[in-house]
Amino acid sequence: MSTATETAGAVAAPTLAVWKFASCDGCRPALLDCRDELLAVAGRVRIDSVPEAAGGVAPGPYDLSLVEGSITTPEDAARIRDVRARSRYLVVLGACGSSDGIQALRNYADVADVADGAFQGRVGAAYPSPLYLSTLKYSAPVRDHVKVDYELRGCPVDRGQLLEVITAFLSGRSPAIPDRSVCHECEARGAACVTVTYGAPCLGPVTQAGCGAICPAFHRGCVGCVGSARQARTEAMALLLLAEGCAPDRLLRTLMPANPANPANPADPGHRAPGLAVARTAADEAAGREREEGRREP
Image (cartoon, rainbow, N blue to C red; front, side):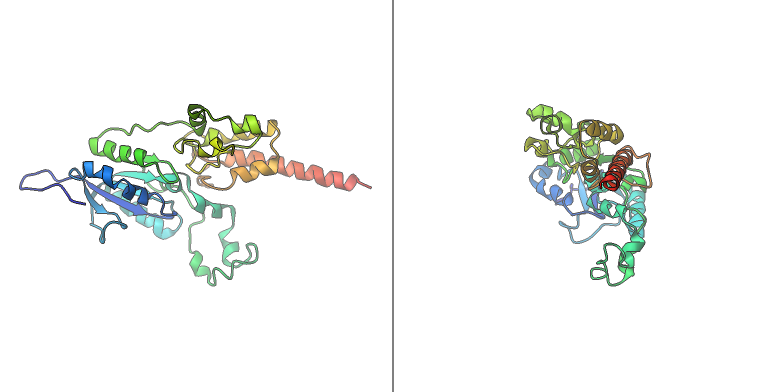
């Protein structure tokens, strides 16, 4: 992409860099999908690092760094600190970087068990050497390692919101991104509440808006792929779903999959640990009742 013409005494164009960490690679291509819209700002910014669009990486410093992915290895942790040190502003893109993403599923397993093949008894075929699993104890959002100036949630991020974030930081203002839950999007499009109408567990109340309530529009509960809302009250939601008759094991499966944030940081506003604790307790109590009833049968 062309840069602003720089003449003697002219002010250099702001620099933009894009970085990848542990992710599915879905958010950075969203930037390339905005190529037509980005032409409007092409003369105002110099892109120093976009792996998919450029062959090299300028050394920096950068005015704005866009970071995709969570931090899962010691190398990731060192690299994100280096990116932070070279960036005036650091913006996290997507659910992986803000709520930990799919790779956080490994936080429910013991890395040592996986390394020695004890996990489900079949890991040895995929990982012939424990060295392939040199990793941090937990996969974690970027904010658990460095200061983050803004988090744009999404899976992948919405192109309109991405353009708004880039334009806002170039203009020196705060991004105008709605800070609300998926429930508001259900109301806006007239979709019925799947929990009230169909009795299905739904993570809409604790998930950041941005997807347009796609799953609830098709009578399916929200799975939280966009990422946790900034104040996710998972404990209250879990208690309400149990009171409405949701089976404890189903609630547990609903809360566990993706974007749980960092288990080592319970103070994280997007953490699902309180809700998971409620679901696990209820599931354990239900299992205990079943065992007791089994012993009473003749």
